[in-house]
Length: 250
Length: 339
Image (tube, rainbow over all chains, first blue to last red; front, top):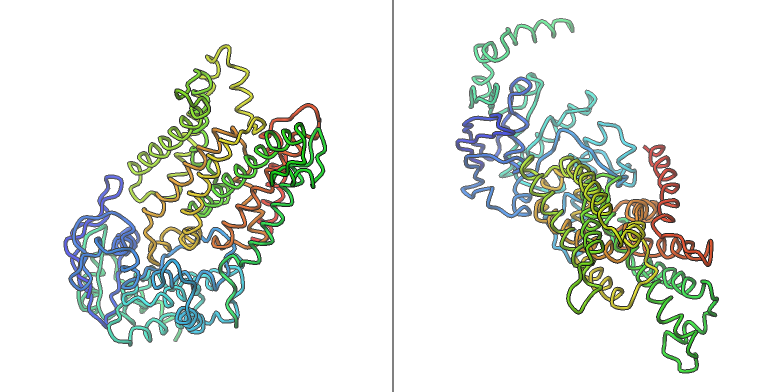
C-alpha cells in the first residue's frame, strides 16, 4: 500500500532522518517507536509532505510527492500532535474541514458530507458539542475533534502522531479501540507514533524502531521490541522496568 | 440537527449592502456644506434640475471621495482578514507582512523625486506602490523560503516585522532628502483621500473587484489555515499555491490602496475582529462581511476627519488610528476573556 525507500530528511543542515526503508500493507497498524528526538514525528510529516525530504514515498506505486493535495488527502490524513486553532470555530466547522478534498469549490456541503461529519462526531462522542467553540474545549476534547475530522475525511491510511496525547485514561482506551475498529474495514491501514511502549505492543501489527534518525529495526513488533533492541536504544532493561511498575498493581 | 449555514446568506448581503449605501449617502450629504439627500440622489442619477455648484460639490468632490474611502476601507479590511486567516494570527495585517511598508516606500520615492509616468502623472505613485508592494512580497517570500522551505507562518511574520523596520528606516532617509517636497510627502504618510478623483476611484474599484474574486473564493482554504497549516495540508489544501495566491492578491490590493490613500493604519487590523464578532470566524461569511464593514468604518472615520474641526481637516490615518487603537484594546480584552 505505502512503500518508503531511502527516505532522508535534513532540516537546517542537520540530518533528522537517514535512509529509512519500510512498507505498510492493508490491515496493518505500524507503530513508530523510539526515544525523543528519534525522528518519529518528522517521519510522519515527511509522509504527509509537510517537510522536504530525499527518497521515494509511493502509495500503491504512485509517487506521493507528485499527487495533488486533494488526491493525497483522499488517500491519507495526518493527525498532528499539537493543535493551535487560531479562532473560535465551532466543533462542527473544524470536523467539516475534513470534507475539503471531497467536494468541489462551487458546491456547498452535500448530504454525504453532512452524514460523514455526523457519523464522525457520533463515533468520537462529540454530538453534544457540535456548536461549541473549539477554544472552550479541554485538550482531550480537542484531540477528539481532530480525530473526528480525520474520520470524516475518510482516507485509507491514517498517520497519527501520538493519538492518545492529552487524553484521560478512559478516552485513551476508547480512542485506540476506535482506531482498531476503523482498521477492520477493507484496505485501511494506520501508521502511528506512540510513546507508550505498552500501547505499542498491544496494538501494533508491525513496528519500526528509530533512534537518532537511524532505522534500528523494522518488522514483526515482537522482534522490533525485543529485549536486545530495547537495551541498545534506551540503554536499560525496558521490559524489566515495565514489569516492575506493573507489580505495583498486584 | 440542522447544519449551521456556512456561507453568507443573500439576505445578509442585502442588509450589509443597504447599511453601506445608507452610510455612503450620509457621508455624501454631510460636510462643510449640507446637501439634502434628494439633491444628492438627483445629481447622482443626472437630474438636470440640480444647478452648477451643488452638482459640482456632489459629483466632483463628495462622491469620488466617499467612494474612494469606501473602496479603500473594504480593500484594506479584506486584506487584513485574509492575512489573519492565512497566518492564523489575529494581529496580522498587510502591515505585519511588510507589504504596506513596501508600498509606502514606493509611493514616497515617487512623491519625493517627482517620479511620474509620461501623460499620466497620477499613476506614477500608484505604479511605484504596486511594484514595491510586489517586490516586497517576492523578497519576503524568498527570504522565508531560504530560512524555512515550508514557509511556516512564524517565519513570514518575523521577516515581515524585520522588513517593515528596515523599510521605515529607508523611508525616513528618503523623507530627509526630499527637500522642497517634504510637506507633501509628510502629509501623504499620514493618509488622506481628500483629493480623490474619478480615475483613482476606478483604479481602486478594478483592483478590489479582481482581488475580492480571488480571495472570496478561498474562504474554505483560509478556514483550514486558520485552524492550522499542518491541518490544512492534511485535509487536502494546496498549501503553497493558496498561500501565494492570497499573498499576491493582498499585495496588489494594498499597493493600490496605499498609493491613493497613504498609510491608513488599523483598518485592516480592527475590521475583521468586529466582523468576527458579528458573523463568526468562518471565512466564507467573514470575508464578505469584512468588505462591507471596512467600507462603513472608513467612511465614518473620514466623515469625522473632515467635519470634527471643520473647516480644518484631520488626516484620515490619525482618526483611524485613534478609533482603531481604542477598538482594538476592547476587542483584544474581550477575546482574551472568551479564551
